[in-house]
Amino acid sequence: MKIAAVIPARGGSVGLPGKNIKPLNGVPLVGRAALAAAKSEFVSDVYVSSDSQEILDVAATFGAKGIMRPAEISGSTASSESALIHALQEIESMSGKMPDVLVFLQCTSPFTTSEQIDAVLTKLMEEDAASAFSAIEDHGFIWQIANDGTAAGITHDHTKPRQRRQDMTRRYRETGAIYAMRVPEFLARENRFCGKTVLVPVDMPPIEIDTREDWTVAEAYARLHDPHRFSHQNKIKALITDFDGVHTDDRVIVSQDGTEAVRCSRSDGMGIEMLRHRGMKMLILSREQNPVVKARATKLHMDVLHHIRDKLPALDAWRAEHRLEWAEIAYVGNDINDLECMKACGMSFAPSDAHPQARTISTIVLQRPGGNGALRELSELLISNDLIG
Image (tube, rainbow, N blue to C red; front, side, top):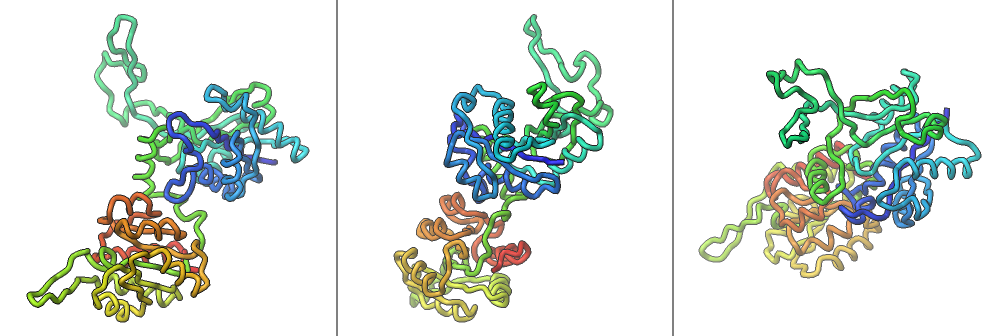
C-alpha cells in the first residue's frame, strides 16, 4: 500500500503574511509538517503543494517534493480539496501511479507529530474506513443566538441543571491538523470525509496559526514543549558566550578604591566543564575591559577575546581560525551588542533575564537567569538532546 502525504502551503496569507516559511523556534511551519510526515512509519513520500517557489525551496530542505499549484486554485477562497486533487494528479504524472491513501497535513498546526499521523492511519486501516481525522476532546459549552435574540445552547440543554464534565457524552473537535483518505473514495466524492469516517483522539495543543496572536501563543508553547525543536538542527562544535549577564548576573561590586568584582555560578562552571570534556570548543567574547573576564576564562579553560567593540568580525576571524561553519556554532548572549552574532550562528540562546530583543531572536530562551544557572541549563540541554558534534 502506497501512502503519500500532501501539505498545502499557499504563498499568500491575510492574517499573517509569510507564515508558512516563518521559523517557529527555529523550524518553519512547512518544515514542521514535512518533518512529521517524513518520520511516519507508513508515509512513503512527502509533497508540498504551493503557488510560491520560495515555499517549495524551503520545503525541499526538509526533504519534501514540490508541486507548483496553479493560480486559479491558490486564492484564499480555493478549497483544500482542489489543491489535493491537483496534487494527486501531479503525483500520478510524476510516479506513474496514484497512491492508495492520501494524508493531508496542515502547516497551521505546528506541533503535529509522526506518532499522531501513524495513529490516524492505523485507525483508518483497522476500521476499514474511507477517511479518518485527528480530534481533541472538547468539553466547551457552545451557544447560538436564537431567532428571538435570546441565547440558546447547542451542545447542551441550558434549561436543565448543568451536567458535570464526567457525566457528559464525550464530544470531539477537529484539530485541523491530520486527515487521511483512501484515494479512490476521495476522488469520487471530492470531499475529505468520503464515506465511512472515523475520528482519532490525539493529545495535541489546540493551537492553529492564522493570526499574529496565534503565533504568539505558539511561541510561548514552543518554549516549553516542542517536538520539532531540534529536528533539523546541525551538531554544535563550539559555544560562544558573552560575559556580563551570561557568566554573571550583570551586576558589579565596586570597592572604595575602584576595584571591581563580579559574582559567578559554580554550577555554571560545572556545566562548562561537562561540555569541555565532550570536546566542545569554547570562547568568551566580551566588550568588558576588566581583567576579571580573562581570569574567569582561564579558570574555565576557555578561549577569551575581551574589550571587543565589534563582536561579529572578531567571532568570524576566530571561526575561520578553528575551521568552523556558522551552523556549527551556538552563541549565548544577553544584550543588543550580541544580536548580530546570535543571528549569524546556527543556534542562539538567551538567559531568562536577557534584553527583550535578545530573547526575541534567540533559538531558545533559557529558564535560568544569567550568572544563576543559565550556562548549566544550556550544557545539560545540549548533552541530553545529543547536539554536540
